[in-house]
Length: 196
Image 1 (tube, rainbow, N blue to C red):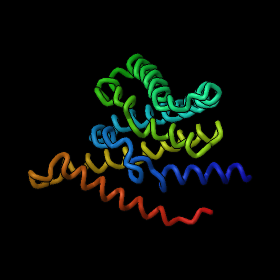
Image 2: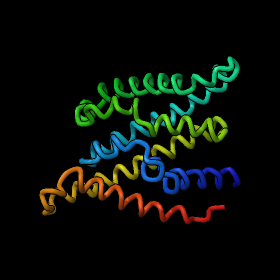
Image 3: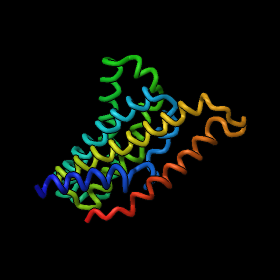
């Protein structure tokens, strides 16, 4: 039962309290760029969940079994970026073959997962916090779920705002930034949760 409690604690912490987008401000480019339609936001979210979880596993293994034994921890960032780029290439090819419409709607944002600092951030945080292999994978998975939750929330709000009458100066990115700020303030309320 203690393991289930730890997993639930990690899930709530990663999704709500330490959300990569709204509390650490990582991954803002796809958050603002892909959040215009719910369909593309959902597809991007699923791709990010997969890449974050798999990247967490691979980067942990590379760090533990290659970089630390060779005393080359200074190459972590380069090794992690190369690993993430290879995984994103795999995901991109998979989506292109299985869901061409989604691939087309994601456009340039799918390759941007490679440079999505949330994916690199989760790998670096896992190593920095000394998480175990399983904990790293779970942290990556729940971090991706948190990313997807806020991406879908933003897409839902932006779809509704397309039908609203807004002043011309507030249309597009200005209103998106205001919404992002309000969402960050709302999620800041979760930091007061006492889960311990």
